[in-house]
Image (cartoon, rainbow, N blue to C red; front, top):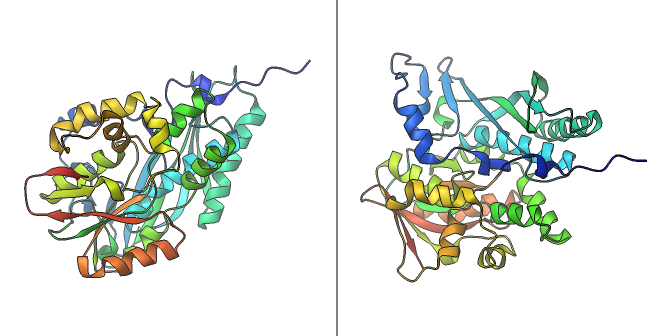
Amino acid sequence: MNAPIIRLTSLAHGGGCGCKLAPSVLQELLAGQPAAAPFRQLLVGADTGDDAAVWQVDDNTCIVATTDFFMPVVDDPFDFGRIAATNAISDIYAMGAKPILALAILGMPLDKISVDVVREILRGGASVCADAGFPIGGGHSIDAPEPIYGLAVIGICRPEQVRRNADAKPGDALILTKGLGVGVYSAAIKKGQLDGDGYAEMVASTTQLNRVGGDLSADPAVHAITDVTGFGLLGHAYEMARESKLSLAIDARKVPLFSRANELAKSGFITGASKRNWASYGASIVLPPAMPEWQRDLLADPQTSGGLLVACAPDHAEAVLKKVIDAGFTSAKIIGHAEAGPAQVRIES
């Protein structure tokens, strides 16, 4: 008699980037940490809430380093490995760099999950790294009460190619490269309410490498890049506004969405992480008076392996957008602009 199949998502209290600590909690934890100022070669550290750390080795080379791991957002182990790896690599691309090496991070309850399942998770992650053109050179594993998988990733770039979230300029156009909806789709998966087409749509998006970020960093008209993950579009847009010391205006009607995102959000498939996100930064978001709560929650929806938010010179916006679309990001749209003003995000509709 075969053992019952255990759903990976049933073993985790949260899934994907929805597991991240709330933005307010993270800021509180980092507030007491020593400053990295004495290290002049550290071009990007924890102070700007950016996607990865950047260390300048010499006049021509920067090392970019990140780590990202989480609990299952889907039940298929191979897909879980692919999504987790794609998400981790995204931080390197968001900084304008090229990934060259990864180490695996693995925590598994082997009393609940078979070795074959874990092997599939690792195979999924390795397949994504191979597609991106670099190896997983090793890693570390522990016995854990919930399944955890991710990567520590190293990349390289030239100093002038580094793209922080802190360098948006007034007048810049804002481009979002992927549709929103991963959180609400994940909630529907947990409740058995997402069909095969919806699952395929989510996996296609979350396993699409954001390598276009490395290409965009060669364009001086592209001023700032960040990836949209666990804090949702609103949270990562606010980080860009705060660190760039300006306001971002986003037209909610232009934000790309998964095909069933509105329907599922209206039906109540909202994650707890979306509510935590809003509680953390809602005071810095200006909403139109008639916006329904479900739509607000969708804009705060935690994205696992989401797209890039790109700030670029307005007279180059259409050319940058075309470059993004030609790279395979067919949902990409210009969703707003940056302007002088207080550090906030203003939603228009």
